[in-house]
Image 1 (cartoon, rainbow, N blue to C red):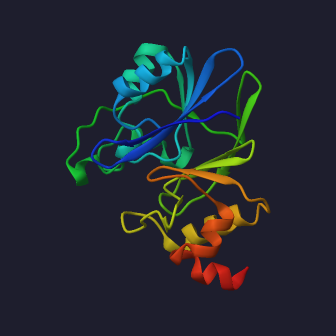
Image 2 (cartoon, one colour):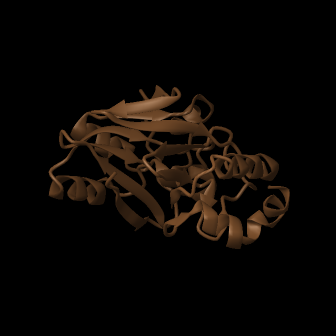
Image 3 (cartoon, one colour):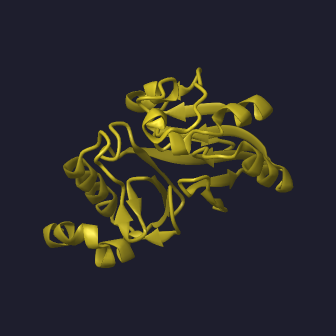
Length: 208
């Protein structure tokens, strides 16, 4: 599967990922600022954005929703647990960080899988960073959002749970394959490297 990363967007340095389909449509994982940068990349690839899959609802991953949905008429998916973040600046932490916020209405709830033109992404619930954080698994890779980074994990001091986060990371490790990970911030890695070297997974290494 081809993946086109767009990295280090906005003040939070967020990443998003374009996944093309054989019909020249595209899925986008997360929608950080800016819609202009993301749409330029899509247009340069000759892709029509059909679906946006959110890993969670924090402000730094949803800023481009309005502009992209207006331009492409695409569907937006988010977990039921995080859906209220799209319309509430307090819940998505925009008020906390003092960032611009435009509410987004009409997102669809996630099921167990999202499919576009035969490209299937399995939804893996991974609470911890937020109550409704999810990862997406497809064809040898996992889009981990703010659950697992290269050398780190997502923060849990803003309404999350570190114990839940560690259980979620353990769930990814127990998939039993060395998946490439594409996180919500920073560069790509893989599960074996994180289990071996990530300092936050020391206890998990002892348990597994």
